[in-house]
Length: 330
Ligand SMILES: Nc1nc2c(ncn2[C@@H]2O[C@H](COP(=O)(O)OP(=O)(O)OP(=O)(O)O)[C@@H](O)[C@H]2O)c(=O)[nH]1
Ligand SMILES: [Mg+2]
Image 1 (cartoon, rainbow, N blue to C red):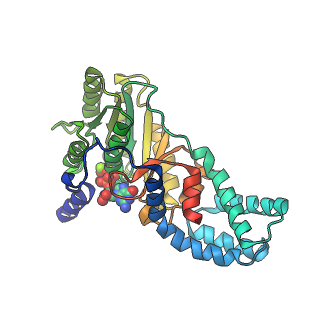
Image 2: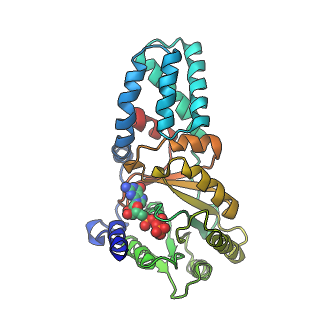
Image 3: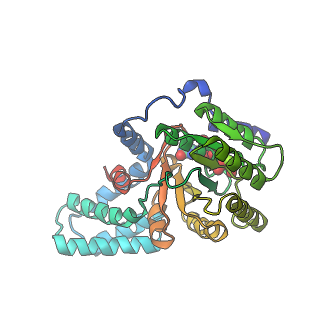
């Protein structure tokens, strides 16, 4: 167990000297695009060849629709979104007289883009100061790593950031966040106490006193079935509200893309407990199950604020439906 934790810690917080601190400018859009494409290579490899062989029929007939249906279902797109996409494809085929494999691919890409576009709602953190973001999710989803990446992301926009070590539960969680704080050269508010609400309340006061722009509050991982822990995080939220009646200004649920269909149940359970206002989808790089994003769009739509496609500090970006769809099909 300890060995596992140590490895996890080492994975999540590589040697700070390896990467330059926050002063370096954000990488150009193209390099992110390449990273996204590399990150989604697995999804593309899994789907791309099969899509091509299905589309090679050259026309949208019953057989094509059936093959496509089973491919989408095995890619975690889910029943509802699969049927929605197939209906949309049929409508496009009728309307545009689709007659080539390329045209079928373009039509499906168009249908997927239209489905995902409503989830593209970039987070604006300039509406409040300090803008308080609370992150929640099941164990190992990527909360703490995403905070490390977000700290750099916001600093690159000229904003000041403070981190709150609200995971007082897991061994080494505080140190893990502190390592990210050092890498980003930002303050981490932590306490010996075991009360996450107290730590975050403290962090908000500190952020006010220092004129900080963004507070990122970490929380311990928990499963929706652990009702006492779900009640605990609801309490954390209420205490944040005491510090600032409008806060948290964003409640991010972090989802591992590999969760597949289980992600839907997580969205619903966390939404009920803490009112989820946005999602971070992590580990799209290691997953062939990115299709769950389409299921979310149909069954429990929430803005996807960011996606993670790697363990590095730059491997997180705002979700853009067009980039995502292109990275899957290109
Ligand atoms: N490949 C990949 N790995 C990621 C990504 N995001 C996080 N990870 C890895 O996932 C593991 C867990 O990440 P953490 O940030 O510790 O997850 P957590 O949700 O804070 O975990 P707990 O605090 O234990 O609940 C680490 O090894 C991270 O490096 C991602 O986008 N891609
Ligand atoms: Mg964590």
